[in-house]
Length: 276
Image (spheres, one colour):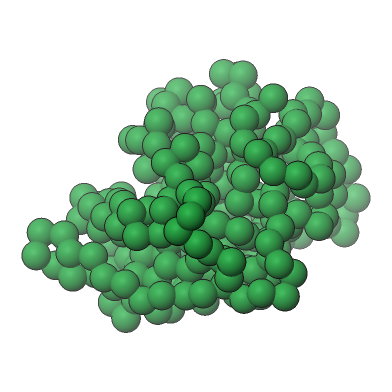
């Protein structure tokens, strides 16, 4: 049984209410960084709330503090706010950087801490997700701070950056898997991704299973790198949530493999959802 796994994905708020988005800044070592934070329409200071840190991909890098709030999880929150009754923190990575640089790590943790304080985020229900470059950042940040996150969702991410040759070296993935094995994980990837090899996710899932971790893997048949809309679009209370350890979805009839399942639970009344 996974305690409160991804509560922010399991509990529905008002079906027609829109999330509220706020522009904020955080200062780290004298540099001001803009970010966006959203809260549910029924947010109030009278309770604590799940809080989600969302890391975007490489195309959203910049310093306007806005473009990252219109893609991936942020887009899903805008289009289906009832699915995400949580605070969502959306920092922006600067050009020529990635999420693993010390400066970017400092600003995203600063934004997370500031948002948790301002909007009453629950430290026991703090979640982390990202796609593409943000998926790499999600693995890295979770490995560095494994006790900070209740669960993580990684979409088309990896451990080693792609190279023209097939990546064979296992050690970086194995070391990282050992650090995140205690965190519930859901991994998404398209099987024809040429930007980040699908082998990156397959290897991490294999290693985590070898460590008896709670991990779900969804692989999309015939989907290339842009799998994030499909992935975040599938995180819904209405469609249910009964994670299987391995799913294949798409038009090629891949079926399901490895039917070892786990149940998800939360501290509210909501239905279990079944995978596709």
